[in-house]
Amino acid sequence: MSNKIATKRQLVTENKRLRDQLKNADTSLREIHSGEADAFFVSGAAGGEIYAVKGIDHAYRTIIENMGEGALTLTLNGLVLYANQRFAKMLRIPLEKVIGSDIFSWFAPESRQLIQTLLLEDMPDKRNEELVLTTIDGTQVPVYLSVNHLVLGGTDPVCIMVVTDLTRQKRNAAILAEQKLANAILEQTPDSILICDESGRIIRASKQAQMLSDKNPIGQLFVQAFPLRHLDGSDIFHDDGIAVKGCQSLEVRLEHNAKEFNFLISIGHLKDAQTKLLGSVVTLTDITERKQAELVLQTSEEFSRNMFVQAPLGIAVIDSITGQFYKVNPRFAVIAGRTTEEMENIDWLQITHPDDIQDDLDNMALLNTGKIRGFQMEKRYLHPNGTAVWIDMTISQLKTTDNISRHLCMIQDITERKQTENNRDQLANILESTTDLVITGDPAGHITYLNHAACTTLGLDPEEDITQMKVADFIANPDENPGLTKGVSIAIKKGWWSGDTVLKTRSGQEIPVSQV
Image (cartoon, rainbow, N blue to C red; front, top):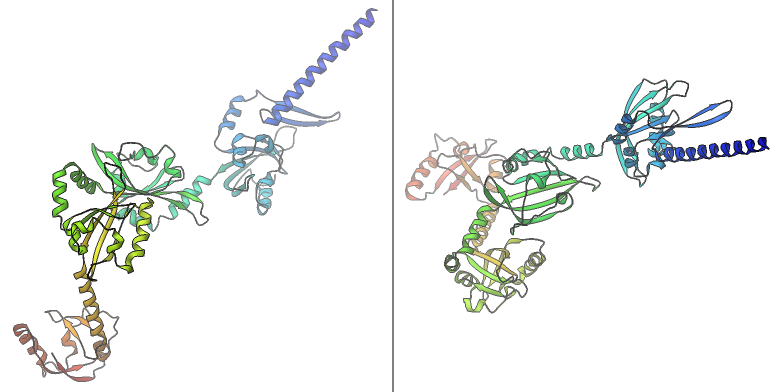
């Protein structure tokens, strides 16, 4: 009876021991699968057994798990025995799918031979190489591999691989490579230009931009180096705003050295040849003086009224919805060929020359949709009697206290200038078309102009530099033929002179001419 009881107790004890072993094995397998513990498989005469190692060198494990590079332990044939979380993040997959995978599956097929060479046991102790890692979604990540061999006593050798992500470095290098031509612009431009990487950190700044910052802005986040605000004082961007937003001609404020500046900010995306986003280009155009002038107009009603009425420029306020003139000053009405009362009952299309209406419509559409803040163009107004006048027009959005959408239009009559340009063009055509030789010179006798006939007759190339040539160079026997010199002296006194002389061409041929 006692033997039976002892046997039963032994069975219960043995059963409990086996349950505990099974529980420990299950725990170890879960830890190995999740990467919480390393595992080694040791084969012997009685078969194979898995050993989980945890708690050993915990400080080293913590360092490896938190390092910025990927860390792996591999067999010589590329089987991943261990990987840290950083490497799994590079591949964008859970860690448990990395451990036990084939390292070759994460690189392009053409890289397989190179990786096999890196893993060879008879190669030098340490090898380095730049390759391209392929993530689970197909994204290519440039990386730097460093491979070492490790031999554990009594076991097969393994490889230790450290993987450094070069994405940010490559992108910043690409951005800076594009700056060779832009460097001169950044140094000389009167605007403040900054180049930011994808995270919004400044990597290049013009001299003007550096003057706006209390310290060197290179390396700082744009939103911290330049705390811009809307005109109402509200923030423009959150911490990551510069990296994702783009804008054109947005008015902003900046306080610097106890002074307030106004800028037009434009932000454009910087992309590589494959249209991948590399960063942003930010331009700040100083409009402080203009805003100060606007403030004077806004704060002084009497001054504004007098300025409006007496301004030498034509000024009008236009309703952006109906296109009707809300208010015009006397000069605007005169340029448009109407009275101020007539102007306030018509819209801008009624006074625009038919040939210029489409350009006007296109620009006004961009203005009304907010895509631009204003525009400038040369166009024609048509008077009631059919006379066309040329104007230089600038239109911008006008902020009003009653929140009604209106535009400010300023015009200047340039009809006389246009006629002068036309006359000059006509005169130039005449001079170039005539068969007579036309030569102009300065008081010192240097040639300042030769028409086509003169160049052809004298044997000169119309494209060559004539500024160092003198009129006397083309006079035959000037000592025996002083007619030109005498004629110039008389012309200076009386205003004109005519007579005969003999010219010589570049080849030496003499040509008698009658000159004025």
